[in-house]
Image (cartoon, rainbow, N blue to C red; front, top):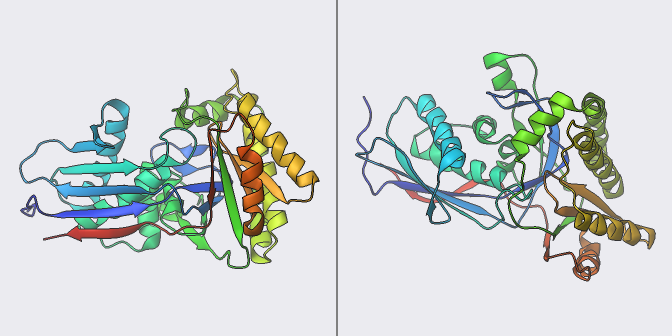
Length: 339
């Protein structure tokens, strides 16, 4: 029997975006959101997303607000589809009101969906009384957005691709924390465009896997990259971490450029930022490039060098803003009232 709910029940959760240092690019199962390869990321201490989920006592549809505006179309369908998964897991049927506030530009390659679905998974699981450990919550968040599986955790996290198909593969694919305590990193985010990108990550990923002759070579190299990355993190070698992250990211963008037709997220402004980072490195500041499905560039460096890196990027006429991040917290419930 479906429990009776009241309008004064609610849970608010917050999560932060993560930036992959070993990229997630390509799925082997679209429905279950199972990746082709493992990935590894750093959750940031900036750009939090806050999501409140409130059960509705008499409603036949979910209500969804993004930044105070009713969600529509594909965005709404993606969120309500995720809520259907939560309902199915809980054995309950009530509809909910979801209110989400982002502090990161949506759809600009700054991991807004990772933070968004990590926060939604955390709040919805609590509302629907799902008793999930961290791995199970990561698996749930993955179904909304693959990268959200990593934002469940603070600091560094590795999302394991798992193997096989069906339920066994679903259970095997989740993120787990990686101890990065020997590092003292910063990630300087250079925003050159803050509007939504013209091609969604999902569509670009699908198209790249299907048409790029470089894709499977990159996927094989990514497997060795993550092994090298884990060793570099374990020994506290930030320079090696940066070198590996840069080669993995540029390789991913090369696969997109080789797609037919090409997918190009990096803009002339992106390349200007990258050139400046290379100049900084030549001048003796260890700084390394990474970029996701968007034009904005992130620069990995030591915390002690972050101010100089940010100052150099701020001087470029193409940068709209420059923000410095450090390892941040995992997803968590902030407040709530439950039956």
